[in-house]
Length: 282
Image 1 (tube, rainbow, N blue to C red):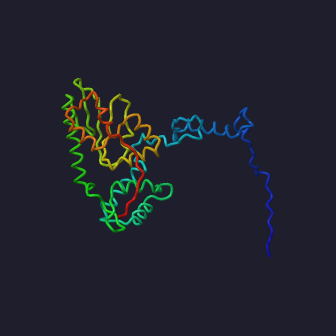
Image 2: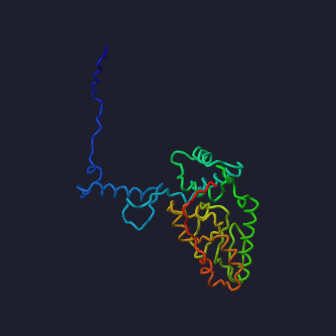
Image 3: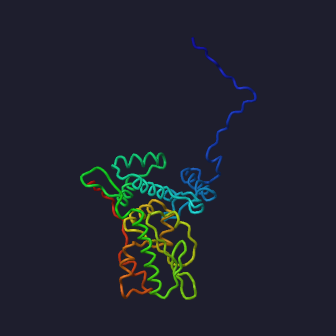
């Protein structure tokens, strides 16, 4: 037998009042609630301490990016950089991995909202690993071991030193290499790295100097993919940095008539471009 219970509000109970959008936000555009809401939303973002509206060609907020405001302020490592680092660690800790095991380990580590798309994973895989012949397994490329990449860093630093001396510039080595004129004013900065990590280069000042990011050719796709999917990185890279392959610097140092006045033209001789990842299993 089911007993029915009736609840009667007491005198102290207060019923929640109902409001219309017009009651909450006074506007003459009462017949255009969608645009009214978008205008209100945009004003909230403008005053937010957490979110930032990324400028774009479109003036409409529906077609703009909303991003975390502190991304370039607190030395945060982007999710894409974390994924790339994890891919490299997988192949340094394991002699070989099948593609299925590779994806399983990735998705165990990065799940939920952090789950990466498969195109980016394929780009990272092709960049760092190579498929074994007539096998389902992948292994770290020979050139990707730490000793070889350390030699690459030394080689690039040596090339920048030689070019600077050839152009009668002062060369200083700090965390990044710098070219200075005779008045010891910095005119160029060179950051050399063997990864596609971009979080560090997001933190730059507004000095009017040339900045160059030197990476192996196999990292270009990773860098361009990250830029495409991260509006803040895209804005910083386009405004402050030029991406240069290691092979371009090796070619440049062998040119007898290279000069500083036309250095940009020399560096643009072999422009970078994004290539769709094509997996080859053997």
